[in-house]
Image (tube, rainbow, N blue to C red; front, side):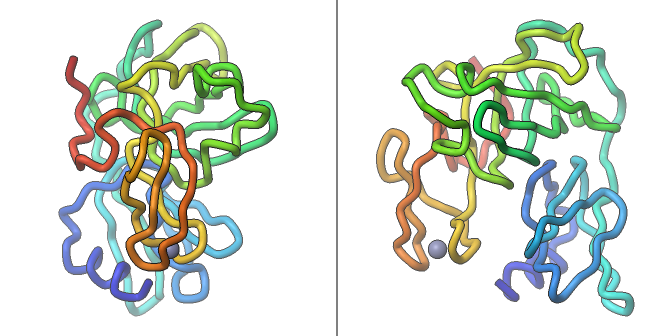
Length: 200
Ligand SMILES: [Zn+2]
């Protein structure tokens, strides 16, 4: 986990998205552009990581040129910031391949997470997953979206046990290269390609 943090510190040009895991709360405090759950600090905006070693503070400098008004059918990228049985809340940091700031909050109803029947949203989504989805309703606050479609879903995710980035080994099956933990997600067809842009 440590090497993960120091790699990021060295490569501050790397862009992160809302929901990207940045550090453990034992070692760093949240700066601007971040939020924390019990153990981890996540990015809440799209931007570059900034680490202040003196104050053990980790922040994300937003990288945004404009904030487009979301429309029905727009493609977004965001991080999972909350999960309940019926709903996943996404902090949207990219719309139609453009980084936006401030972020929009979007909800995915469980029926819009997967074409297959799932009982609860957390069966195929976890905190910190980066997802690509489509906006279904842009007039509501929060926005409403969908992950249904082969190009929509989780584009990368981290191991719930050790925090390593998971590899795809089956349609909706991910495996941790470190601890061999296997997890289920509703993944995109190009999961893990590192290509965050959306092409049809
Ligand atoms: Zn693991």
